[in-house]
Image (cartoon, rainbow, N blue to C red):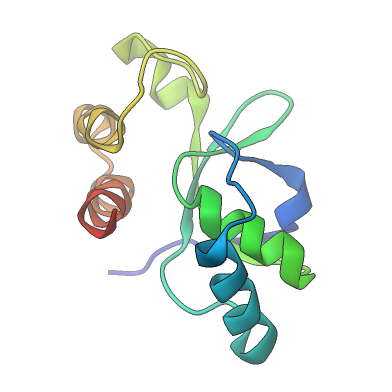
Length: 121
């Protein structure tokens, strides 16, 4: 299955929540300085005026700290989730809730990214 990945400037992506500059982010930053981005893409909800990260707040903070110019993103239009009673920033809290929304949308790739995020937390 081909996955349509866009490469975005990490500074143009709004994280779902702030990530403290802790040892985890510092370790990720150091790894990105050595190897660049390694691993799964971020799940991004595209709104009329922003890219909202639904996964990877720590990875996004590390990418910015490492000075990466682009990060891999799988993008879903906000219009796909609005019929399910949520927006890019409202109506959900936990990873599993966002995974359920992606399941309702019928986007298996986005759902998989959310489920992977939940398993790794």
